[in-house]
Length: 225
Image 1 (cartoon, one colour):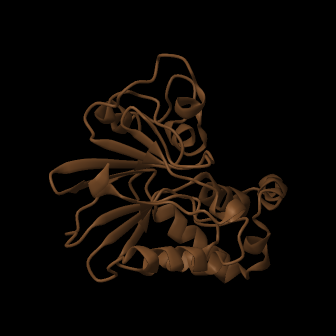
Image 2 (cartoon, rainbow, N blue to C red):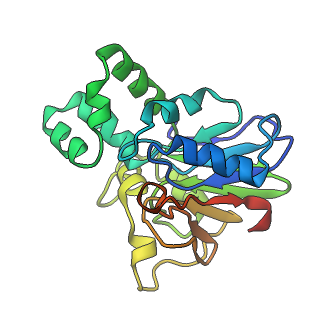
């Protein structure tokens, strides 16, 4: 599976983005019904962290079977993959809400890993004349094309670009001036770092508003950004 994916299916309706779901399946479905989401025509893109900490993790994994839903890979999907391969990672994962995964049988664990490995780290969606980028945690470059190309060469100067994209927070947390408007893309949508309300800097949006902590799940209508 390519780490960078360009969406190639027709979107007949609206394009939406949702922040970190973290096992809050009922909350997601309630919010979708509240906004009048059209399950036949609209597309919902999740910014990763579908699982862990909440109680409906299996239901959230199975969202990946739905035509109206897609996601990039978050650090908690990465923890599932890592934990299945590395016993030392299991405690770290359990400490971060991953006990449900190890309670599942080996067949189910294998299926979940296969689904998560299919998820891209970076997703690009073209819709109604605009280009939207999705990544879980961080975009290091101020150029979308350069960011995508960084995945072609494997390691960056100091960190694996996939790990940086899934685990990094520097763009939102930093007050320095190395991060600016990301050229070559209309908007970049991210999660990972919890904020009390959706946060915008330049053309980057962070939409993890703590669904599993406070019951506040952000679903962004991208025609309005």
